[in-house]
Amino acid sequence: MIKTNLFLLFIFVSGHALAQSTDEFALRYQQTAGNQSILFYGNLQAARHPAMNHPYFVSRQYGSARLSYRGVVYPEVMLRLDLQRHELIILSSEGLHFVLVPEYVDYAILHDHRIIYISNGDLPTGYYVVLHSGDFPVLKRTNARLVNVQQGANVYVQFIFPTVYYLYKDGVYHTIRNRRALLSILHQHRRELRQFLAANRWLNFRHNPGQLILHTVVEYERLRALEATPLS
Image (tube, rainbow, N blue to C red):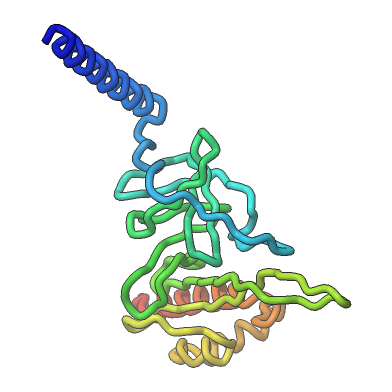
């Protein structure tokens, strides 16, 4: 009976000490991580097969970013965006790669670009780069895709990056596949926009579609504002 009581006492004391040490560990973690502790939980980034290039937005290296997550703004975290899996990954101080819950991401500013996650509506689910956020927003969605490349007798795997641009107008996101489609959507000032593009021949849809779309939409907004300005 005495041995049984001593054994139960040992379990109680050990359990109490373990619970106390666990609580102390959690407290130290919260004090160290501060209000960023909510970011470092969930799934870790899965390993990927090697390829000739990488599937990340701008760089495979983590970039210093500003993140709004569940309504809380974190002014400086380390992020990278996987364009194949459409995962926004955060680097912890221990070197762990956590995948952020996309539905909790309000926005991120990464490599000087604003990134948002869309999971409902007319657009495919995933992360988008906001090229323009004026009266007529412009979004860019890139999907990294693996393809086989033949070089002599060898076959290599590499990523290609098909990209689609979207323009929001009249309550709908329109897909912009070429210059003609863009001018058709902005038909109210088609003639002026053609003149604008003729005077700015450095804007080329084939070489840099995002740049042409952005400058054309900004010019369209300027023309609309002039149209709405009452004559004095």
